[in-house]
Image 1 (cartoon, rainbow, N blue to C red):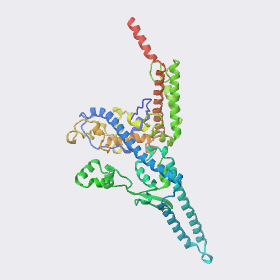
Image 2 (image 1 turned 120 degrees about the horizontal axis):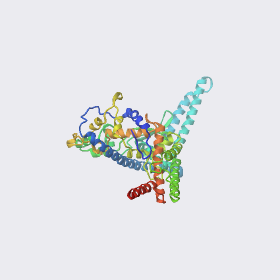
Image 3 (image 1 turned 90 degrees about the vertical axis):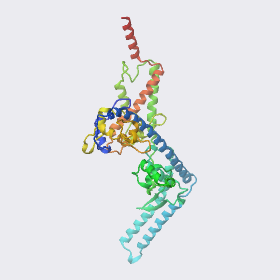
Image 4 (image 1 turned 120 degrees about the vertical axis):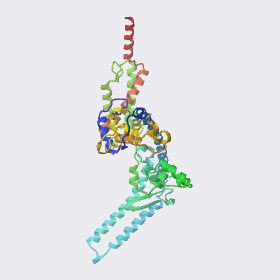
Amino acid sequence: MVINLGGSVDTQLVQGAKEISRHKYHDPGTEVDRTTAVVGSSVGAVVDGVLTIFNKKQSLEAEHDKRVSEFQDIAAECHDKLANQNEPLPQKVVDAVEGEINRLQGEYEKVNVVGKGDSREKERARTKIMAELTRVTNQAISTRADFMKMGQSSGNWNTALIKKGDIDPIKSILNIDGMDKNDNISARFIDGKLTFTTSNYSTGGGLPAFQSIMGEAATQEDMEAWKSQTPEWEDKLAASYGAPISFTSNQMAKAIRTKNLDNDSMVLDGQMDFIKQGKNDGKNSNRNYFRNDDGSLDEYAYNETKAAFAGNIADEKQFQDMATRRMSKLGAPSFKMGLIKNMNIPIQVLDNMFIGEGGNRVHFADVFASMDSTGPNGEPDGFITAEDLVDYEGGQTDFEKNIDEIINALTDIEHPAFNFETSKDMLADYYTNFKMQAYEHKYYASGGKKTWEESEEKGEEIDDIT
């Protein structure tokens, strides 16, 4: 696989494509006739399909951010009530703490023996119970602190790293005004930790609501068939849903990741430095820093700039923060979204994208042909279009899942095929390309010349004279 981000290409990815594909790529498991128009039509379809996936991902990202925004409002309100208005935690939390204290007091009474009946074993038990009582008090204090911390940081959340499945459950728990009235939320001590359990926290209907009824494997087509056979389907899908899930306050706080704004400053400062350099070089008729005399890319200058950027990415945690979200004030998609939009997969290496069971290669034509389903009456028509490759109804085709797998392997630090050095190099390539664009825009706007074009014009004049 080759990823082209406008700069140099990391050749390691060609060798890495096969390794990535073995983890999760979908094998159609069928042989088809490769002599049809499938092979030819798949070339353009890939381009159209990837662009359509990018637009679809942008829409899903906006929907995700909207849901997180509502979540942030709840968290900020929680912080205001606990910190500024000094409100107590909900009565359910108080009851859970008191219940645990009463339980421990009962245990203490059993071993609180004076005189001959006392023993070292009972003494150790009393010491342990007293330590547990202290821990119960600390749990209540830390729960309040975690709730306040989540609310205080709400304006700085990295929304891209907040899992979709965590938003509604945690939002329901942080709604401290409504907790005592919500029969779907409970608070109790589990394994010595104050734990919240919530259910039926989501609303809105659609496929997620249907899947809560029928299971996660249910598809859009299943839902449409079910609607036609279920007169009361609107009421059923309108009901709140969500399987029980439990969190401690510490687990909730860890699920909400915050931005490292130092990364934004680093990227923006580097961008501004090259804008200034471009203006200065153009104004003073200096040569274009990124170009050779013939107009080709100066690989040394580009790679030196790229290496300097990569050197500032210290570890996987920093990489993940930078790769998954937009950098402030840059006006560009996140690296992850940029990968989807700018991914060029040459036909000659498409075979490496699809590896079947046992590591055997599945020809890319077979894979695409198996997706050919948008002809008359849903039958194959011998042509692959974007409609074959992308599900517009909210689900995912195998092609989309494979693209997701490639992107995740390059951006998710927990993916089994993730390689920090490879992905760091690509991230540096992405932002170095923006630096070069910013530099050249300012360079030419400030009077810089494309000397190679002038040389070509002079050559043409000499040819005319002779």
